[in-house]
Amino acid sequence: MYRIHGRYQRGLSAAQAALNHGAMGKLEHGLALEMTRASFKTARLEGTSVASGIWPNPKVWVPRHVEGSPDWFVAVSYDPGVARITDVMSSTPAGWRLVASAADTRATPARFPKIETDSDGYATSLPENAPGLLATPRQIARAHLASMENAELDPAFADGPWTSDTVTFWQQERAQLEEAGWTLRLSYLPEGPVRALRTSDGGALIWYAARSTDARKAQRVGAKVTLKGSAAVRTENRSFTRSVSATYGRMYVAHVPPAGSTEPVRVLGEWSDVLESHGD
View 1 (cartoon, helix red, strand yellow):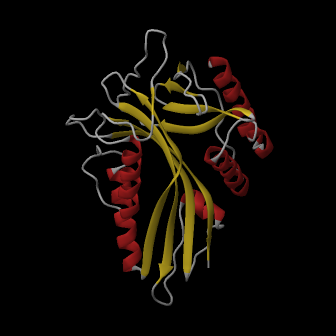
View 2 (cartoon, helix red, strand yellow; view 1 turned 90 degrees about the horizontal axis):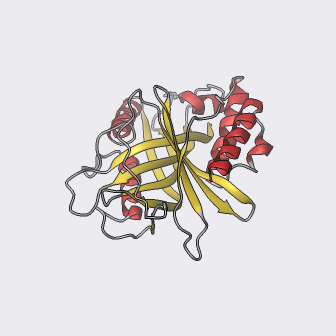
View 3 (tube, one colour; view 1 turned 135 degrees about the horizontal axis):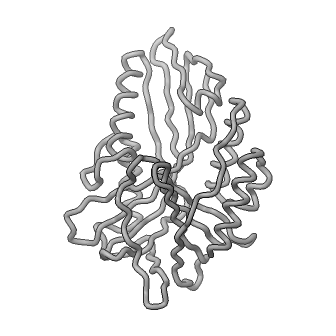
C-alpha cells in the first residue's frame, strides 16, 4: 500500500506541475477527481500554478477486506509547520484511486487519534450505521453538514475552522448580504459513502464529502455583489445585479467519540475546491 500511495503522490505532483487534466483520471476518482480538475481550471484562468510536491513519511492503515465492498486504506502524512494530510485510496475497476483527502494546515494541527489495529496489524473498518459511537458515522456526517447548511452551531461538535468558524462566516456573510439587499441560500448535499476506522479509544475516524452551493439573489434593484477567492476567478471578478452562485466540493475527516463520552466530535481537516460559479 505504501507503493500504491507513493505512485499516486508522484503522479499527482507531475500532473499538478503541468495542470494535466487527463493524467488525473488515472490517479483519482469521483468527487476528488472533479475537485482536482476544477482546481486546475481555476489556476489556468488565474494564470497561476498549483502547489505540487511529495508529502514526507506517510503512515498507512489498511482495514481487512469486507465481502462486497471495495478495498481501501488511509495514508497520513505530516510535515511540521506545513500541514497534516489524510488521503483515502480505494480500489476501483480501473485500479487504485484517491477518493478522499483532507488537510489541516494550522501551525499546530489538532491532536490526531490513534487508529486501532489488530494482532496482524490491520485496522478495523466500520459501516456507516455502526453502533457504539456518540452517533453513527452517517448521522455525524449529516449533522455536520446540516450545521453548515443552516449556519447554526451544533453543540455536539468542537469549535474550530470547519465548524464554529464556518458557521460564523456564513452568519456574517448573510447579514452583510441582507444589508445590501440580497438573500443567501446554502445547501450542503452529502456525496458518496461515509468511511470509518475504529480508534483505540473506542471511537472512530470518519471520512465524508459534500457538494455545497451558496446562492445569492438580489431583492432590490441596483444592489451589486461580487464573489471572492476561486469563485471570483471563475466569474472573472465580475459584479452581479440579479443572482450569483458558487458550488464547491468539500471533504472532511472527523473523530467521533465512543458512546457515553462527554467529548465532542472534532473535525480534523478539510479539502474544498470551487467546482463552478455563475451569475447574472
